[in-house]
Amino acid sequence: MTNATTKSEITKNYEQQLPEDLKTIYKQVVKERSEIYYMGYVLGFILAMLLLLTNTYILKRKMSTTAMVCQTILVSFLTNYFYYTLTPKKHMMLEHIKTEDQTKAWLKMYKGMQYNYHMGMLLGLVAVGMMAYAFRCA
Image (cartoon, rainbow, N blue to C red; front, side, top):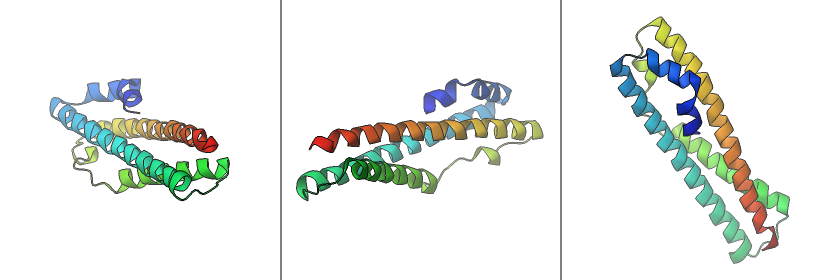
């Protein structure tokens, strides 16, 4: 997710038009959001694994493969989503933007980041689902 966001043309164009003081703030925003995203993903993965291992080895529940995969994806997704959404953010780029051109550029950039966030989430959920699918033989 972070790599796709920082390497895109939209990002490069946006960062080039920023004055130096806003470039520093922008880099802080990117770093903070990336850390929040990955922490949410790790927490979701850990919770999903704990639930999967508990159901499989401790409670000895026999779940269908579909139920196991769906449960794992749901736990991972909800944890990641709510962690990212509810974690307070120190920096909001819109608080520092001064001109209309900067606002338009930010909106274009924001839409690109939104797409990358959702694609990263989708790929992460597919990976978690595949991991859960591997437990079907347990």
